[in-house]
Amino acid sequence: ESTTATTTTLDRYRIAFNYFQQAADKNDALSWHALSKFYEGYYDTEDEIVVPASFGKAVMCLKKAEDLGYAPYVTWTVNQMLVSHQILVPSSIWQTCTIETKR
Image 1: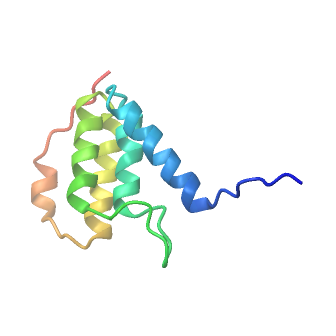
Image 2: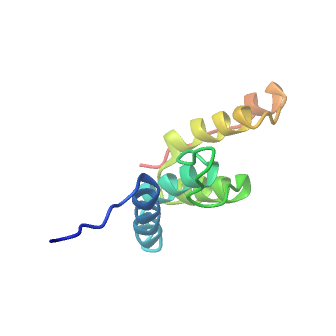
Image 3: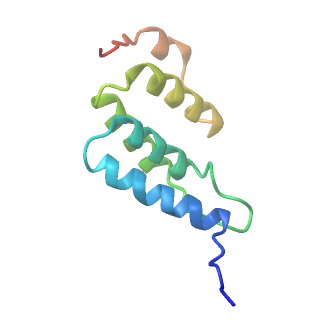
């Protein structure tokens, strides 16, 4: 009689997190962006946490992704994160920012 290991959703998310970390260590911009989602708690449930949520780490990952050329979506994501965490930034600050797209 054979037994098969049951992989839970949480296990799969943790495996994915580890793969994204390995790719990010090789300067993969999309992996940095994916890691930010994990640190936002995007894949957590009420009783299962993939990695401890950290707004600071999420923003750091997005900035790293931007530095590696993933700018267009990162800018939108940072805005959305600020809103979702109810950090209010006066519109005058956003209006004076110049956003450059790396290609």
